[in-house]
Structure formats: C-alpha cells, structure tokens
Image (cartoon, rainbow, N blue to C red; front, side, top):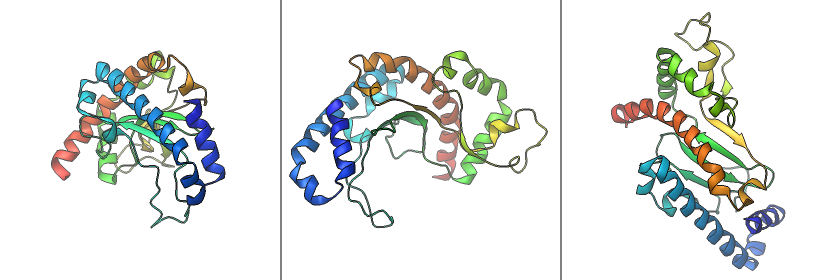
Amino acid sequence: MKQVYQFLRSLTRHNDREWFNAHKDEYLRAKQTTDRFAVELLAAMSEIDPDAALLDVKDVTYRIYRDTRFSSDKTPYKTHIGIFINPPKGKKSLRFGYYFHIEPGASLICAGNMPYPTKLTNMLRQDIYDNIDEWLSIIESPEFQTYFPTVGGNPLKSAPKGFDKAWPYIDYIKPRDFGAVMPVSDDFFCAPDIIERLKPIMVQMKRLNDFVNYTVDIYEETEL
C-alpha cells in the first residue's frame, strides 16, 4: 500500500494527462494493489455482513478519472482512492455502507453515505427520536466510541422543525448527515495486519448502519 500512497502523492503534484500517461504502469500497479485490498475487505466484511458476499470489486471501487463537466476544478484525475462496500445493492444505493478512503494526509474510514434528501433525513431524525435508547446504546457505547467519538456532521443551528427544542437529546437529531468518520494516518492502511485491525471497526460500523438502514429501506420502498 505504500506504493499506492507514493503514486497518489506524485499524481497530486502532476495532475495532468501527459504525466499520467507517462506513468500509466505505476497507476496500474497501484490499482492492482487496491483491487486486491478490496477483495480482502469484501471477504472480511462478508463475515460480519453476509450480504457483502453479493458484491465484487467493480461494485465497490471507482474510476480515477474525474467528471469535470460540472466542476470548477478541471484537474483530470482524483487524488484519492475510495472503496465503498454497501451491501446488498452496491455503491449507488442510499443505504449506509462501509467506506475506506485512501489519500495522503487525509485517509479515513466512514460508516455512512452521501447527504440524504430532506425527507429521508427527517425520517431518520424521527426514528432516532422514537428509538433514542437504542440510538444511545450504539453511539455512546465504549466499543463504538473507541473508533467513532462523534456521529453526524453539519448540524442545524436550532431544533429541526417539528421537534421540541427542550428535548434533552435534541443535539442528536440536529445533524444534516449521520455518518461516523474515523480519520487514520497514512501508515494505517499499510499495516501488514490491516484486515484484522479493521474487523472490530467493521463490527461497530455495522451497528450504526443497521439502525440507519431500517429507515433507508422504508424510504426506498415508498419513494424510489
């Protein structure tokens, strides 16, 4: 994995097609490494979330080529590699999944998904409100907080519409997203025992994902 980080650092400094084409072999070696890592992640994840066995590498990885059509940043290549295991439907599903982000100086692990439609976010807030004891048993447990001390980001400044601002747990439903992020060092993914290190983290991620995905599944059944 160290070679992958080395390639990404070089790509960050030389993000143009001429350099990339001249170093295509380095990219292909990096891709082979991360594809093997994805296979190992899927195997480990299948032990914890059996539906992960329904996915393969193409279902959990992304192209390095950026879509610049609607972006002010016209650099042609991504300078990170993402692996998103989102059973059982794959990376395009709204369900919470298991994301592994490889980027020099900004690597992380995340249980979550992209920001949700407003209706789904409000459904999730209501589910947390109605089942606050279960929510707290997950996100405040020592096992979970070992890896994810906080859950949710980009909070509202005040109570969400329709919820009592005096409710003692109101801050838990203010976030606009409910993902849990664990920043890691560049050395983390390079450890020879990385899969074994990840397994207890995956177990905690699944606890959060299972709670959220109950609501997501209802939303997808009724709205999509």
